[in-house]
Image (cartoon, rainbow, N blue to C red; front, side):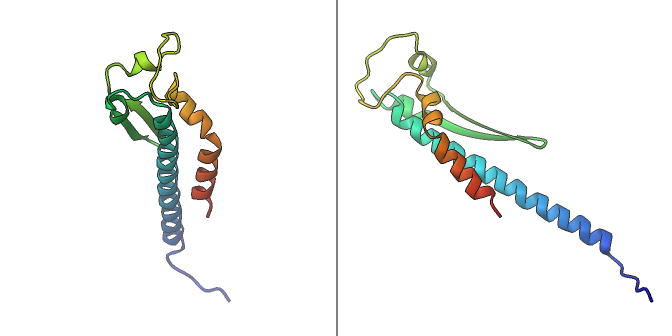
Length: 122
């Protein structure tokens, strides 16, 4: 004897939408955490003279369809000059380094991976 059940397809659609929404939020949160960790480490390596460069750091998260893109940068006009390894400079700050943005993310790669793994876990 069979029983007819109504609404199964709608329940499946709602469940899929809910799961997609949760995964989407987790991915955004994981990327934001990764940006924060990497930019914090980069801030330690950023040369400081008047703090203009350090204060001009920004984080940006953009969504294009199913692709999330995170970007960290500096708005100070001389940031590329200071970041360039081919231009020799002496820094006052002991932790300052050339290519501070790249090295900040490279050095915190393990912490970023762990944070993403933790955030994306169910």
